Each structure stands twice: as C-alpha cells, then as structure tokens.
Length: 239
Image (tube, rainbow, N blue to C red; front, side, top):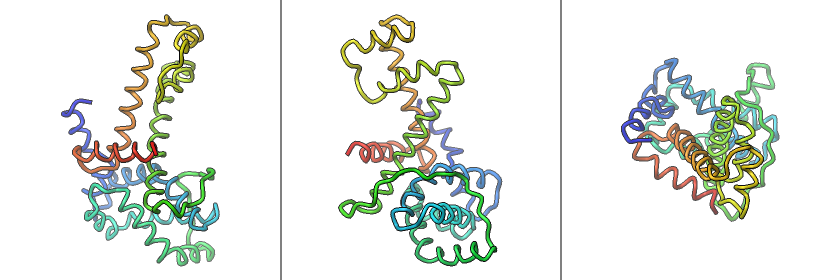
C-alpha cells in the first residue's frame, strides 16, 4: 500500500476512532470498539483461563470487561496509552480481574446482569509459562489472532472469487518455499501452467501481507507505529 493511501486509511482506524471519541457515545466509536472487542476476545479469554477461570466464567468476564470499557472515564484514560493498544488492553483487563470480577459475577448470579457474548470460543490453550513474562504471553496470543484473522479474510476472498481449491493448494506456501517438484504437482492439480505457479504464490503472499498490515493498523494510532508493531508481533511468532 502506498504511503498516501495508508495515511488516509488511518483516519478511520478502529483504535484512533475510539480514542478520538473518548467521552462521546457516538455510533462510530461504538462500532469501532465492538470490532476491537471481537478481534481481541480470544487473547483475553486465554489470559483469563490461564489465571484459573473456567470456560463460562472466562467468557462472562471478558464480555463484562468490554462493556466496562465503553464507559467514558475508561476511554478517556486510554488517551494516556495512545498507540499502545496491547498494553492498555492487558493492564485494564488485569485491573478488572483484580477489582471488579467478584462484583460482576455476583450480579450475574443474582440475575442483575445478563451477558450476550460477542464471540464463542473454547479453544485449546497452553498453560501459562513461569519462564515467560505474562505480558509477552498475552502479546503472543494477540499476534496469533491477527495472523489467523488475516488468513481467514484471505480465504474468504478466494471463496468469493470461486477459487477455494487454489487457496487450499497454495496456502501451505505462504510461509515457506516450495519443495522440489511441488509447483509442478500443484499446477497439475489446479490445471494451470507450471510457469504461472511462482506468480500465483507471490500474489497470494502479497495479499496476505496486506491483510496482516490492515489488522495491525486497526490497533495502532498512527502510520509511524505500524511497522514497529508489525515487526514486534512477527518476532513473537518466530521464537
């Protein structure tokens, strides 16, 4: 994406919209925040599970947390963390777990609160590691979610174009070079010339990268922060 287009895209970045609308219950801010909530549901859910919450409680507390974040004082406080969405999200969630979890669950048990989860998840997860800082473990889950959503969007685009079989065949080559003779075998499966395989794979990788950048752009405040955040998240998954 060329710089001018990227700069324009940041005018409506989800995190920027939420920050700009702090203290205002605007439809744009609520829609942007709900997108972020759906995007960040899984790392928070895993974080809660790693801290001893069962599946149902973890879902409930994440949902209650996002409801709380729509309150004006909390959004105003986010201004101090501008551009560091991961840090703001984790520190706010840990504070919520420590101070508001019991009250939230008591309200639910007493019938005073009803949750409608934004997202259903009960995915396997690894227990917390004592050798890795808590923040780094959360960031790794955060990064994994970004790459998974980009891959899902990429697959959806191929589905819409009626090219599901092409995506299935080429997806394994997104992050590794082809093995000897692999292009020829895949070309036969897909019914295209072997000479076109390298170009098709390159286009797939470029589009995947664009979608990853778009996901990262949603959680930073300015274009200047995009490359730094992207490098950090890629590094986490490369360890």
